[in-house]
Length: 283
View (cartoon, rainbow, N blue to C red):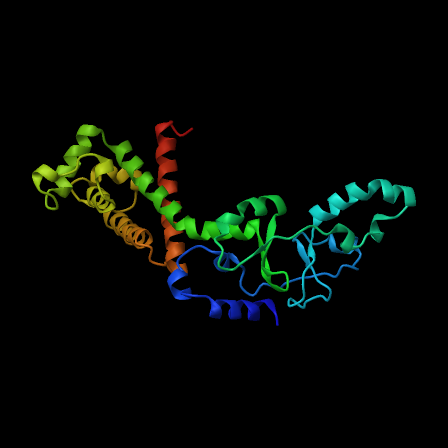
């Protein structure tokens, strides 16, 4: 039984799988269709040091139902060489004669239902953890796997945050406190009651920013910053708002929407850089 087949069995036996799927656990981080590479204790260790990833040690390669005796890695190889150096020198034993069995380090076995945050210390120490049990390996999770996963989860929120802070900065760059209040009264009068109308950027919604920048009466203040036509700028900002709302309501965005969000973020960065350059006299 290969690791993916074992994983399906574990998932089928887990309680409330559909209810707990929204939580970040190791079954989310484990790379799909990961090819589990294993090695036997008798293997010459130097042959395995060409692989950066920690490798489970099994009696028979590839049979994940067998009991694993630990991990072999660059780290375990280096520790073994330092530990055995006096004996190797005394016996004039080449490093190439060291076997994997002499270089094994203990493996931490995690369950697919574990929250990966509880394994940060092990990842920091060993660079990887083994998912499954000693006699039922499901896969290897490395620190880079966790980093890529967290980046995938967080990047839409990071980009939305950058976009929102950038449009605030651009509006603030184009107006003073009094001018901003005037723009708000002009563009938002039909949206708010007079005593509830926001005049401070932090009190406004992203939709308010769109209204202020995209209103024909206030556009002249922002035209030099955003460039192009008012209609195209407003349309782009409205697209940003739709994507922003989707992200903050935890709606899973499509790859196309992700690319659009990244494009909008880059566009805002370009506008901010241009404004900054002009403010510094083109330096």
